[in-house]
Length: 156
Image 1 (cartoon, one colour):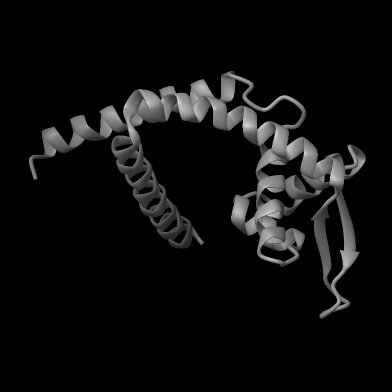
Image 2 (tube, rainbow, N blue to C red):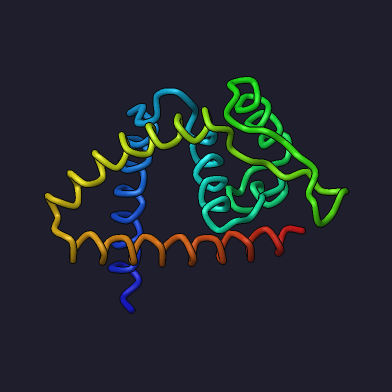
């Protein structure tokens, strides 16, 4: 591939990425909890729908945050009454996290608010284009995670 064209494509991707990141971070789409709290609640809701509990370590891995960050997130969610911790029935050493009824209500309310905005984007783009973009972004995330892992392993 032409290195000049490759560089220009990289610059364009970076600029779009930065504009999207700024838009998402600067627009408080989530009102009653932080972005990370909403993400954790979403993962807990999805696990519960599958009939599974989740431990803090699994949330750290899924969300790609440090244990210290996760402890702050969970402490805040617990103080708000959105989650509860209980010992795993299958492994007493493990503490599983679950959404409380209030946590489910708060998360569902936030999720519906976000979905309203996302559905406006889907309506503007069309379903097929939205699905192509979702697949493309997912592909970028996978490549990025692999690249960053390689870079971190090279530094270790």
